[in-house]
Image 1 (cartoon, helix red, strand yellow):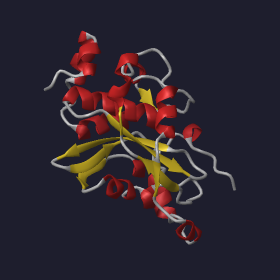
Image 2 (cartoon, one colour):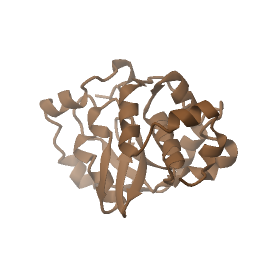
Image 3 (tube, helix red, strand yellow):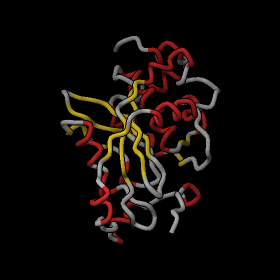
Image 4 (cartoon, helix red, strand yellow):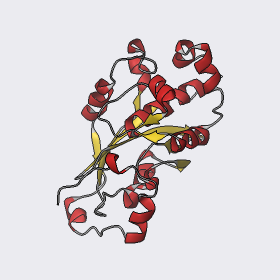
Length: 212
């Protein structure tokens, strides 16, 4: 394992905790096991470990911090939505193929195996499963990957500072559209069975309330 930024900054107890993770899937299993955080805040991966709860942005940052510990680049991607919450995922590459780890209130917006040949191909795997509680398909664009080592000096993995500045940064990145206006006008809603599956175990307080 390479000596990473996060490996240097973790406490002895935190390193022992991080050693339980062996691959991206083990990170996903942990994120699935902890509570969804409905609060409008963004705390560091250290706080996620302490409080055992996270929303999608905090979950992506936590996954990226563990990626760093395991020797992957700590990269996140922003996915913009219409009439819905945006979504942030932690992405990784294995043998040249893209995969993702994510925390979400929707079961359909979480892990992706590293089988996608391009970042766009990975993002499009979310399209039909990215819908609001009304069943409207809402994904509109995605950013290029952002390497969090750019914020190493601010100790993003362990700081007590709110990390909204990272959100501002990925918000400012160029975003690539995934659908045209013509496509949007003819989109079908998700089926009732898919909506039910997507909302399985969701925390109602954390669900986006779409405009009718």
